[in-house]
Amino acid sequence: MKPDTLKELLAGNFICQFAFPEAYEDLTAAGDSERVDAWLAGIDRRLARLGEDGAFYVAPLQVHRNEDVSKVRADLIRFRDSYGLLTQMLNLVRLAKEGFRGVPGEYVQLAEIVLRVNEDSTLVAQLRELRIPGADSRWSNHDLMRRMLEKLKADGYLVLSNEASEIYQIAGKIDHLHAVLQYLVENVPELSEAPLEELGVGEEGQNKAIEQSDLLRNLGQDDERE
Image (cartoon, rainbow, N blue to C red):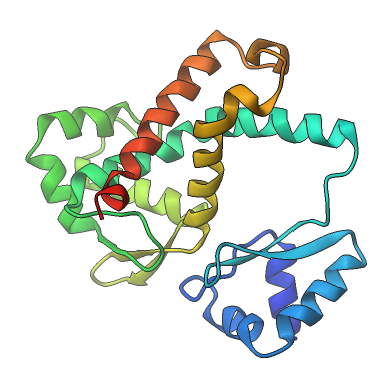
């Protein structure tokens, strides 16, 4: 086990072959993931993985107290609301890139999706409605889209594959987002017997939650057709 691998895990990163190739190779080496898992158990954590060949990440060893369960339920509901911008940005990429599936390893080229957005006034309107941190409404569509992709990169969902051509690649962390949001779409009414407002989610937040559910279903349409 390399120290840098453990450092990246403890920093909260999702270790996949696209974002952290060396650390991913380290964790997939025979016996290394077991050693990392054993070490993490000493700090009440475990090594988790998204599917059989997805990204590795650190998760709590277990949720065992009633107050912990209640907190997780409330956090999951707030998650969908607070990640509204993220789902909106990914949905815009889906609409602007033909055949986009949102899976790890998939490529997104800035020039390609900007061209598609410029051809569709509806997509332009969606782009300019986004509240992208650090962006200015006076910017060109190209600059806004670049800032959007850089935001996704900063959040760990994209990696820059080719700087000269501004080609990005989807990182393994995207699977975690899909899994959590899909769980919320299917189970929010059953997450708690308490109404959403009792968990601190107001009417506006509930409306946004419904909107994010719809966006998530859109993001999964290509997979369902296959």
